[in-house]
Amino acid sequence: MENDNLTRNEGMTPQSVKPKKPWGEYLIDNSLYLFIIAAIVIIAIINPRFLSVASLINILSLSAANLPIALGIAGCIILTGTDLSAGRIVGVVACIAASLLQSSGYANKMFPGLDTMPVYAVFLIVLAIGGVVGFINGFCTAKFNLHPFIVTLSTQLIVYGFLLMYLMVGNNNGQSISGLDSSYTEFINGSILRIGGTAIPNFVWYSILITIVMWFVWNKTKFGKNMFAVGSNPDAANVSGVNVPGTIMAVFTLAGVMYAITGFIEAARIGSNSAGTGLNYELDAIAACVIGGVSFVGGIGKIRGVIIGVVLLRIIFVALTFLGIDANMQYVIKGLIILVACAIDMRKYLVRK
Image (cartoon, rainbow, N blue to C red; front, side, top):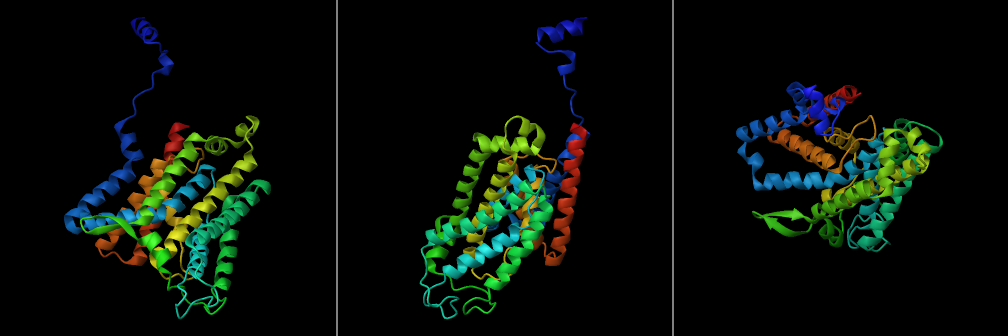
């Protein structure tokens, strides 16, 4: 009787009092984070240069370069899908941007008769290309009721084939595209701030701005609410008046735009672009999203989680380099991270269910 009175006085029913989560559940749910933190501490002890200013800015720069593609794929995962074409879209956009922004006097210019185009014009062109491919992914998924895995696997091959053909156009003959104009490289790699003598590239600020815009889109717009509603339960969303096919197409189109931004940054960042540009970038992005709590069960994910996932994954890869781990072995580790993160994510879902 005393317990019933207590719950009434506090405005609660006995059923509303949630049991405390056991410590074991917390440890399992956050085991990946705990493992990564422990690994960082151990690596910093083994090699103190890992936490130097130059190393930290390098991690920041690599994270910023990969953040837009992760933000794009995150939306697809929230819809219980994925996007296997992301890396190839990055590659084709990077090569197109590089070919249009080569220096006029460069000896191996892909299009000798074409003057260097304005950076903003090329940026708009590649955004349109990424958006079109993303729209095709969304259209086929929504209108033909195909799984995004199949659709994006198909577009991955199509885009890659187009990239290989594009690299044979003009005087390029399949070679890497380099010799970029200074207006482009300065726009991306230039710096307005140095810390400890190490420059922070301009694209870091661009990624921060893009992240702020995406946070607003996800959390403050009708589009964002519809995206989470469709991801949680498309049938219920449809009954509620949400345009489910339109939302799916919009999410994939926005994802394509994010991949285009990544490609535009990547072209100038690496300076020499080939058919291998963008290879497996989607795997890093998917791993980062899952680590950051974007769930494949749909309707679950936060921008800050994506940021955390991207940063943690970059820390891991930089740490592996500091430890001298073979580059081929890094693929094995990357695959294990995705597998473990997905297993933990599914376990969380089953516990909630």
